Length: 604
Image (cartoon, rainbow, N blue to C red; front, side, top):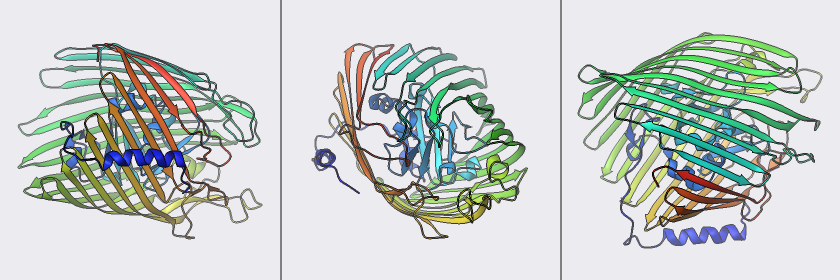
């Protein structure tokens, strides 16, 4: 991996703070609570899975303009991106495929049923309250697609008035407003945001900018009755992205992503609690220069029951009924698929003395692929009050999507992709202000779906999707977190071997080495920070010999409180203007500046 001297100097600065004495550490901060890892509230420090939490304060401080910018701050999460804002973006967790990452918005799956991963590039951070990232398979709790991990986005609840005006490089213009009202029993909130930018040429050979616009609406209302709490949520992102065809013709497409859900939750007997969620999700893309489109509509009834077993034990069980319709037209090939799937799951977790455990099973009856089962087992040993040793094993599952089976190169006889994951880890809290975490993992994925073309891409014999590959990803990840006075520091590293077992090749767009570091300073009226991101070389594609070089990037951000409630923020991306590649022949942004004026009601 090439090392830039300015980046090295930044790393030395933050490592100096790492080695500083802890005798003047800041007051302890309450650890976050996560729900994605187990479908129940668990302190992150006690979760038997690697988890990361991005809270609202971190989102605001970073100045990030879209979700992928936030995710790339963490080791083990890699991006592939076909250009700038709004362009197709892939996220790889721990070396798994991009479509092995399950993405939830307020508990509702938004992965399309046609092709590719969830449209993270259209999720505006201004409407996000918190993000939880769980690494490793979670198919037992969430079903198909959760082989590499789960990313759950929680939208902002009712809050006092807030607004943001943002301007930046490439004529970036962003405006967000929101308001809310919360009483003892009821709350309501609404946020609306819009962004526009001229962008920059998405393709290296192009000489025309690729513009982007996106409008997001996020609404929420809830009421606590005598027994039940009822919550209604709606999130929707609509807009347009300009891009280029392979022969450099300028094209554009419209997107419409939405989630609507109605949730009822309350007690059930003396020791039980139940949650019932009805949801509708949509992922729609329409080409503006031709007839092609892709649409997924998914309706889900999700019922969950939690029973307190006493002595720290909890039994969780649930039923999930799904109806999904996927339709598309691509390069003259039309498809339409309707699936009705049924699933049931059960999980037992508990702790007694130094011992902590989790065991889960899921049964799935899939319209196209019959009955499948997945399982998870995890054990933790609290060797000392600050040291948790853990071991875990589990299986994952991904059903081929409609395009895999019926689109270009489609094969209706495909089998589901399956995974087996093993993991050992430790989480050590040195004191109230410092924590170390180390994880060893191996994830083997069988029946990987690949486009097989025996005579070369677009050769005389047409290619076809086949279950011909197997992958094994072995890795070591480590992190260190530290707080001292106004300083907050996080260092994460990943060493992994993402291998295609069929030919021994390194998996495309997955690096063997990654490093992330952030240093934040908060003195109340002034806040600032620096991010360092480094990745080693990665093969670009299974269909070429191109290798994308490693890179090291540094970003900076700062905020000044002008008066109670008013903040001036600035973010500089790619501070040293480094050239780097996330996808071959697609541009990435050089040095860029973004400034915003923020208002938050209540003078916070």
